[in-house]
Image (cartoon, rainbow, N blue to C red; front, side, top):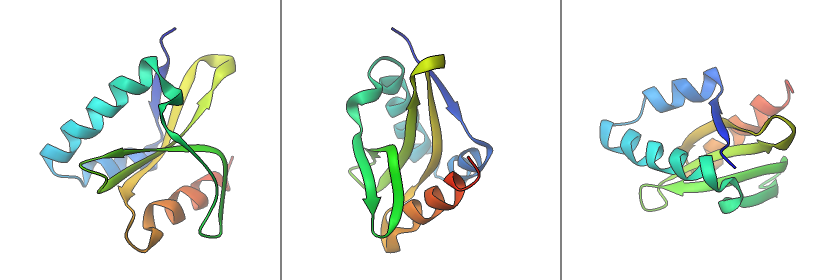
Length: 101
């Protein structure tokens, strides 16, 4: 089964701020998500941020995280945040963005 990877507008902004090299590494991870979205690790409650139902995937030797969820009923992977773990920034952004869902 092939999943469609959908990138939220805010995550597109995250992506555009990365170096070209990092963008290539992220795109490679997106390709993996198309066929195996379960590869990511379930998040749950991460540093006080409730990201239950979301997963993380690493890129750039674990320097970057991709936070996403699998939407089975429409066979879609929705990327909500991309960024560094430092100061839990990527999880904070992801948490803020999930509040609107």
